[in-house]
Figure 1: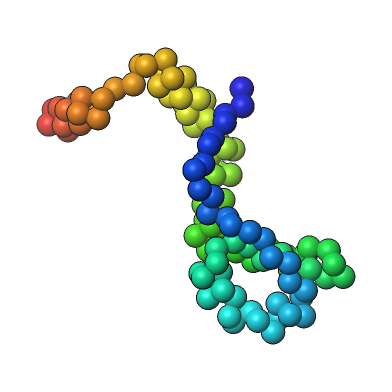
Figure 2: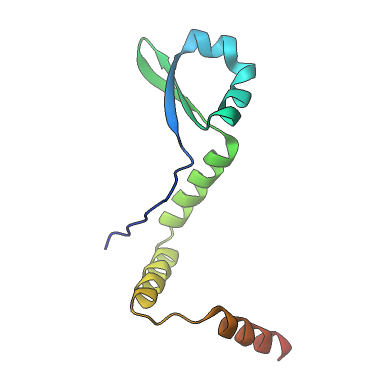
Length: 106
């Protein structure tokens, strides 16, 4: 079963290709450039991508996503939760808070 996620807005706006020689010259200014215009930079050698430069928070989110996708138990729980929510078996936020507070006090 494949999960489908719809994102209203992606954090990755565009990928810019940059020859390795130019990337070396601009390395210290790339963090500011990526802060101004989010995306990634494909560093190329002879026209072929060889490296990717991206903001650290984007890198961390990709790694976290890969870790989650690689955890079979977590993915099974996520699929079950999505199924239950789509079938209307969700618990209201107020009820969940009450149950958590009750569990903490016991």
